[in-house]
Image (cartoon, rainbow, N blue to C red; front, side):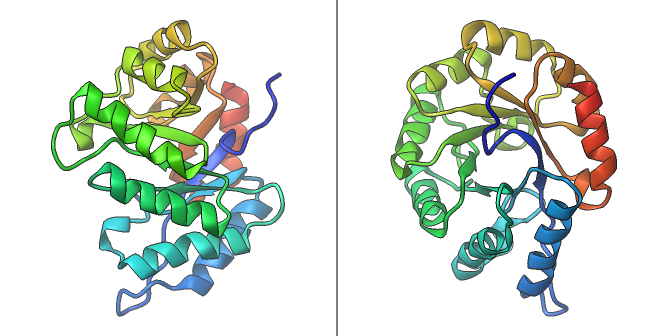
Length: 225
């Protein structure tokens, strides 16, 4: 049994409540953090795809992390989404997350242009300067950058990635990652591969469904792992 880390367990890719005028409803968001914690989830991943960080102002995006940290009870982790166009912007968001008290960050590759492997490694090395553990987010369908197993292993061995949210939906990759980087933590990324990736040795699941049905998702995750 591995020691439980802040990125282990069911981490909710959180929906973000909005007001009619499309401003963020921070009170409802704080309530939602409490709802997820009370129903047994292990943590929350704000400012990701479901939080639609691209639509927030800088002040709103920063406050979302601050509210999540303030609302989180003891033992409930905050994995801040720090995806951005480039390394320097992601670093600034990782520094803001660290200052706010987040436990770790979920980091996409650079997503303006199709970065090569050296650029991707530089990206993660830059974000690592903020000092928080980094969970990589491999979503080549949307970012056009594929964190293939050998690249993940290189970044992990350099000390710049502790785990990876694997969103390709290809469970065979998990075994290759584990072979190349045995100490890398695997997080389920696609909700239709929970069984396959869970059996392969996942220690976490970054999921959208628990926003609505947390207890069912926790039961599913526990059975699959």
